[in-house]
Length: 201
Image (cartoon, rainbow, N blue to C red):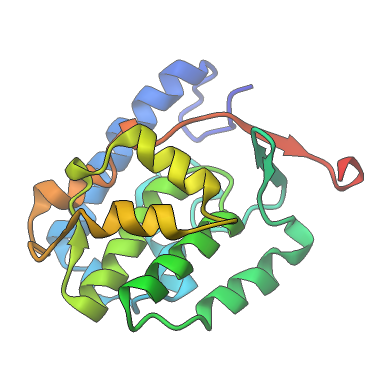
């Protein structure tokens, strides 16, 4: 089922293609304008701003907390009824070291606050925190896609794998646009959300 969108696209493959093109263009604008650097690193407001910036031309829900329960495979993200509280708890998490920042990133992934576009928005958000706190970012070209997805799936139980994977890819090239754009690369993103009702829990 294709997500309702502002472009009137009813084919999911076509929507994915157009969404990728538009969101990448907006991601470049976000980077080059310097607007990203003006946001408060690690806040949910900054994540919502990033999401809205990337997807406002495509979805009416851009920047808004989702109002449906989401699952991917057998994993269920934070239920809507606890989502705002979960986000508030994540905001309060410390972010002064690499380990703390990745723990915060993992928790935000578990929250999965948006209906669509969580991965891309949250990777920009992660790099923004790393840049602000440690003057480092992830060189996503050095992160194997399959290893990353598997590590992220396992991270709510044990985050040592994702920490190791991302630590190996740290770079001090914080103003390199190519490195930044690798995090938005659609190849890291995989579809397959299931919407479920609370009674299905």
